[in-house]
Image (cartoon, rainbow, N blue to C red; front, side, top):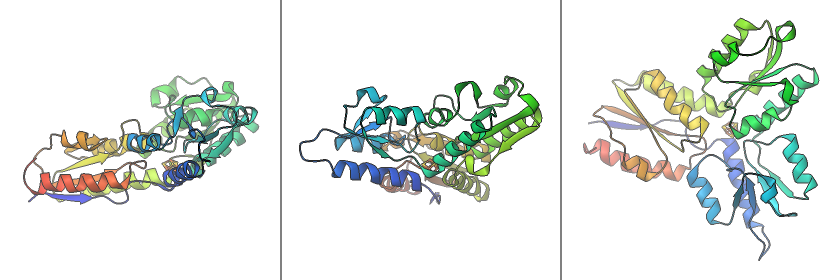
Length: 297
Ligand code: SF4
């Protein structure tokens, strides 16, 4: 009979847990009759979490111009640039800062490189909120965002081949290594720091998926729970595929899970991104067990 394994660790990381708690506390401590609490961008990239907060009165905005003077605004786990912090202060906003400490470490490293006058190379996705916040720590003319070996080839020559390198915390570890190799092959004076790269939560979840696929006694499938907007969630599916899983799929909610066309395999693993609530995993496991172990897909 096919078997379903829950892959550990999975789900909320420490940064997301802290951000969710900060959001709940801000909503709970609103004075009676006060308006909503504002959140700059999505608190975390998960539609279940975001919709739950919206239902409790949280208002999500894409810029501080939409936040009334004096209101409470949350900065998400992804962090913000110093310019955004300054704008919040100048508008007299009451800031609740849920920036993850692992993101703060990357910011600190970028500031140090910029103070030394070094070009800063950020390995990451240019459109991601975390990368926008990180990039804002250095003058724009010093910052270069790369996501592939082709991007590295397109970089200008740096004086003395010197540059400081950091990475978005939620990338695939193998992808970051590939871009780092391309950077090292081209530039002889790189400064890097393991503390300013893929975080422990992202690494641990990818490692667990890789080990599950490689140690499965036969061809296996991996189902990843989480929103497609979530970088670390997408990477879990990519990691499973790269490790040799015969089937991988991403489901953002129970409807998405029901719609999956599961193949006939002896082994399935299920995991969830660092911003996916545990309740979703529990419901998904119960539903998948019925489908897989009951022999009805
Ligand atoms: S994924 Fe990593 S960097 Fe992002 S919130 Fe979680 S612990 Fe922090």
